[in-house]
Image (tube, rainbow, N blue to C red):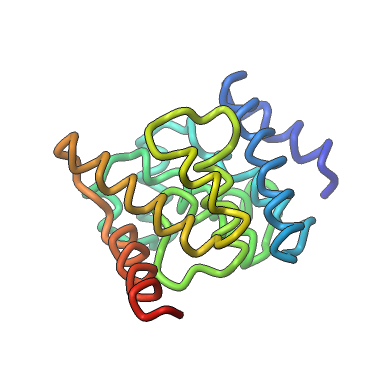
Length: 190
């Protein structure tokens, strides 16, 4: 699928502001993919479709979680987390994108996980650092990402965990797993 066609499909699913975010994520992801030698075409599609399910009704997303046998514990967390896993299934059924690497990157862009592929990391961190983002800690992550994407993912997980804790919000276990994996890497010098 060509970029223009993909963007046209996604634009119908998103608000104007979210569509602009998606374009920035795509541009950021392509820069990172080029730097880290990740498949540019796959990264482009994953970035374009990463928020495909973002504005679906919560009841529709809940049905997808149940019917597609996604982890049921997702239902115990804020629906903001659902659009990644649900979107990874929706793009297959609604758009015909049936690529496990693209689907994985979309699935994990909201929570991260332990042992992410390089493509998973590119989409996860591009969504976090795209130029329209402005929150405490984002510049620190931007400054390290081209030197060490693993460190950047750890920092993003750390910042997200700290933010959610400050708001007394639950934190999805895979985000802790990402944090723990990367801190273990940092502590052991790997």
